Length: 451
Image (cartoon, rainbow, N blue to C red):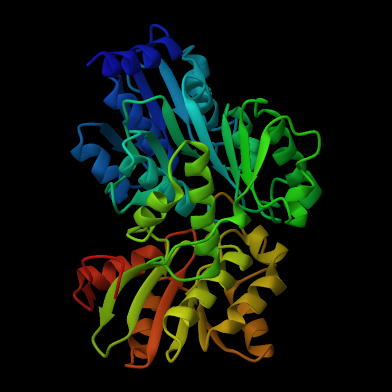
């Protein structure tokens, strides 16, 4: 009981005198996890967002009040702290209202960083693989009895949640590089899975991204560790003048995993190396990872269509992630044809990686490009899903595009066959398609991640 009280005390100390916290954009994966964390520690939590989701419905079922308003997000009376998603601009009405009402405001990265200072923090960073690696490390520590607090960028199948409140000093958290968010964290152990060009709507180029990682590396104390593959060119460049000890995860052996793909083997090596740093025995961590249940939208096998196609849903939205995911399908289903549905995320990213997307999708036997998910951007008319489909066709792979997300369902049903694997990929709302197919009974739901 003392440990639980100590955790509650830490939370109150971090936000002194604050009881009522409002989350603007509570439906985000990180925001919802942080809301759960504060709610578990005795704070009165409210939230708002522009549309509902499964995550929001889960929060409401747990007792958190959430108001959905597409146009205007209000701040409940009595709010003492506003925490907001970094997707909001500084001129967003809810932030201006908070300023008018003299309510203290923190971004999600700022709030998470403040909380992390009270823990022995294991931060998982990198362009790809953060979520799976975070989940693997978390499962390993939980099974070993280290009882960590966990904030992960997806729903872990083993936890049925994106958050776990532990009673120990350990915090395992996913560290996002977008807008240099991870620089608010205070890690004792930093994992770098890889570094590649991404988020070029914010960063100037790869060098700018590496500069941010370099700043994060410099925050690790000389008693800490950086777990990475120092032989990777883009990673080695951020390790100069490092104070912490470097642990090379590439020297470790990957166990036999339920998930396919070389990228997941690298994730597993990283988890084993990190667990060993924390005093766990590698062979025991390997045994845990051999039973790894995966996370939501990371090679998530949804079920089987009526003619026999396996339907998979995945978060891949960067060319390298798409390439690795499709290679993983080839590895797991070597005799099957791959039918890929891809929803580009952001107009700017589609332009920045136009050729790379077309090349990555060549591994598929046929491709459907869904409408570009705009998120925080407005189209200037210079790029469309049709442009990308034409380029994929030009390079030799059959490709089509549709103007509405609702048209994706009929394409999937049309491509259903005994010799096909169908995968939907993207960071937008493409997962709603497989959700609908499951709810309509078109897809027979599997009870786990294995077919």
